[in-house]
Length: 311
Image (cartoon, rainbow, N blue to C red; front, side):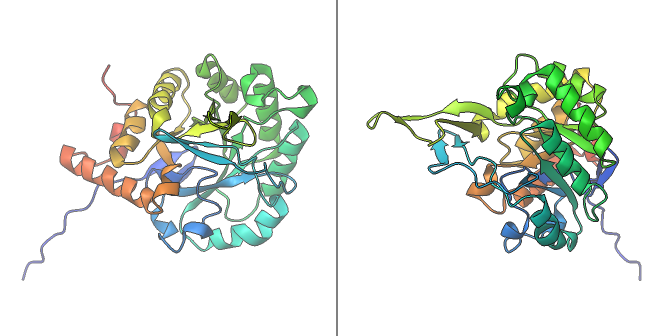
């Protein structure tokens, strides 16, 4: 008796900066904790990867509340990069992630070049880490508080120093709060980065008109969610045309169609962020949506869609 051959599903695997992902769906830093927080809802091994909440050299308590405010089609947050520090991450958070068959990319930050380098050095060589994502949107306290990611020279110098401190694949998470994001992508490339993540949140503010006070204790915060997606897709498209580095696209992804916008614009992978606050199954639903769209269009490999928007 002849066995019926079951047709294979689409090939969702991608390579980004030498890291093989079983599929292009990751989690955006700051929206998925350290993975364990969502493990009761989804099997982390089904994801392409987990980008963990930002890690600094020392513990940070973050900003006072209120720290989150919902906006039309989005969210403002001013958490203040609260985290337990790199030593606690290595001893208490990373061991859990090692149990799952998924890539682990660690988001790092600091308030001086030395702090960034110190975190990178501590993580270099740690078992179970696939790469580092550098949040360059932090204020450089030694230079008067201007964010590293809004100054071309500071961006290049910071990323160059981190590149020397680690052998891990390095992704620069670019800020959208600049005049020309492609210039900063070029600076990251020239500094030796292996890939790019974009975009980080847009700077925003909300005011309670009755109390006449800001909705956030920090006054301003980062705007994320579907409201920013067209801006993010545009920036991915612009960068992909000018800089030949793999891109992790993010900004308001809720469905598989949203994710495919980024991939067609030039992203090799995507990260789901704010949607995780609304729906803990969001990442898997995005993944399923990508598969369904590929089946509808007769596309057998996700790689065949990267950068294929017709203009």
